[in-house]
Every structure is written in structure tokens, then in C-alpha cells.
Length: 214
Image (cartoon, rainbow, N blue to C red):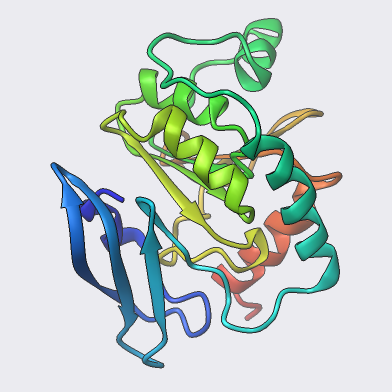
């Protein structure tokens, strides 16, 4: 974990800011440590360079099954750090639809094998944060993209994103069906949603938290 990421992180339980404690580091990478919530006093581990920000309550069976199934597959593949763009999910769609490159901070929600995360971090002028619920997914993503200065990896549940308010605002949302833009300034934030059957309800559930009804 790169120390600067902490300014964007919040407790997944109460939304309060987190305080970073470093136990072991390698250059700019926090290898092990913890994040302490300033609100509810919950503590979250940083292990193998990844902050583990899953909600304190036990995950639902479908979440556990998803994490175990996808995580197992990703954890057993050979991985090398990505140093050049690979024609993968988002890059293929971007080229096929002639989409403009994402701008602003990018959230790769469901980063999985880490290839899209690495591709975006290679080209980005702002931070790219990959989120996955599985141990295997965050491990592979970090191996592929962790060496890139703009890339970050967080283990979290997409329905309880552990980020500061406003991270989900003004987003360019993309899944397998194509892009859809929400209101707000173009390029303020970009949000890439993948690895779920219907990404938009997850997005709407979290933006309801970010934008409560009047």
C-alpha cells in the first residue's frame, strides 16, 4: 500500500477517517501495518501490501462463494508485472467503441486479475484504485500493478466501498454493455465496473449512501 492512499480511505462500517500505522515497508510500499478507525475504533490489517477493508460483519454466503471461486482461479495463474498495455477487457472495448481515455481518478471495481488495473495505471495521470473482495484477486492485482506509481489495490466489498464521500460522484460508469455517464463534470472521477452480472444496481446502492434522499 502506498501511504498516500490513506487520504482516500474510510472505515467501511462508520465512514470515519483511518489512521495508518506502518509495521514493515519497502521503499514507498507499506507491506504490513494497520488502519485504525477514528470513529468506531475498528482496526483493519494491511497484509502483503494490501489494505484489508472488508466490513467487520460476516460476509453473506454469496459474497463468500464469489470470493472463493474467483479468487481461487486468479490465485493459481502465473503472473508477471505489467510493463506495457495488454489488449484486455476495457482496452478492447475502448478501441472497439472509440472511447476517450478515462480521466481523473479511476476506480476499477472488481479488479480481479489486475490486467485492466495495470493498463489504466500505465496510462493514467491520476491515481487508479483497484478493488476486489477476494484474496486471490487482490494478490494477483498487486503482483501485476503494484510496482506502478499510480496503482493501488484495496480488498473490499463493492457494496460497502471504503472511500471518502464524493469518490463515487461524477463518474463515468462502464461495464460489458458499454459506457453510461452520470451527471457532473466530465473527467472529475472515473469508475470502471466489472465482474458482476449487473453492475449498475451496486453503483446505485452506493451512490444512495453518497447522496441520501432529501
